[in-house]
Length: 343
Image (cartoon, rainbow, N blue to C red; front, side, top):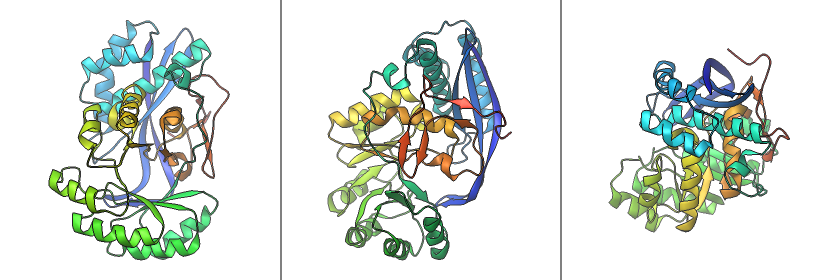
C-alpha cells in the first residue's frame, strides 16, 4: 500500500472560541492510502493543546511509510496494530491512517465502513451544533444563523456562563448541552448544575481539568444535578475504566484515541459499563466527519458538526443537515475529495 499526505488549511465561517483560545482557520493533513488503483482517505488536524504540528505529524507518518509499503490491504484492525507498534504515542497520526485504511478496505470490498467494523446500520441519532464562546449578542446571532438544529452544544468557560445559557434558552426549546472544556472548579460545577438543570440543559461535558484530583471528580459526580460527560479525561482505552464511577458517559474523538479501531472498542466497553456514549470531532473537513460518523451504531449522542463550521470544505461524504446524519452511497466511509480542496 502507498501512504501519502498533503497539507490543507481550512478557513472558518466565524472565529471559534473555547475556554483555551480562538481559531480562525484549521490546519489539517489529508492522508491517502492506496492499493490496486483504489484510494482511501483520512484526516488529522494540527492541535496546539496536544502538541501536534504539521512537522510532528509528518514525522510520524514517515516512520510508518515503509511498513505500509510492504503490506497488502489487510483488515484495518490488523494494520492498526502494526502501525501502533511503530508510533505508539502519536494517536493523531494513527487515527488518520486508520480512517484511510477503513475507507480503502470498504471501497475494495464494496462495503460500508460500519460493516467492516462489525456494526449494524446506523440508528437515527442527530448531531448537535456547536456555539463557540463570544459575546452574548454574537452567540445569539450565531444561533439565529442556524435555528433549525434539534440539539445545540454551548461552549462555556466565561464569567457569564449562566447568562449565555439563559439568553439562548429564550431563543429555543431545542436540547441544550454545555461544554466547559476544563474551565470550572468543583464548586462552580455543582452550583452551575443547579441553575443549568432549571434551564433544561441535558448534560455538562468535561467541567474539570483532566488532571483534577479523583476526590474532586467524585464530588462532582455525586453532587451534580446533571450528568457529567468525560472528554479530555478519556483519551485512551485504559481511560474508559478510570472514568467509570466518575463520569456518566464518555465523548471520544478519533484523533485522541487513535482511530476507529480503538474508538469502537472504547465505545463498546463504555456501553458494557452502563455509560453513555458520544463521538465528537475537531473542526475538520468532511473527510474526518465521514470517518467518525461510522460509529453511530454505538452512540447515544453525536457531535459531528465540524465541517459545517467551515467556510470551505475539502470533500464530499457524510453530510450533516440541520442535525440529520446523511450517509453517502459510496462504499467505505463515502469520501470523495473535492477537485479544488483548500490548500
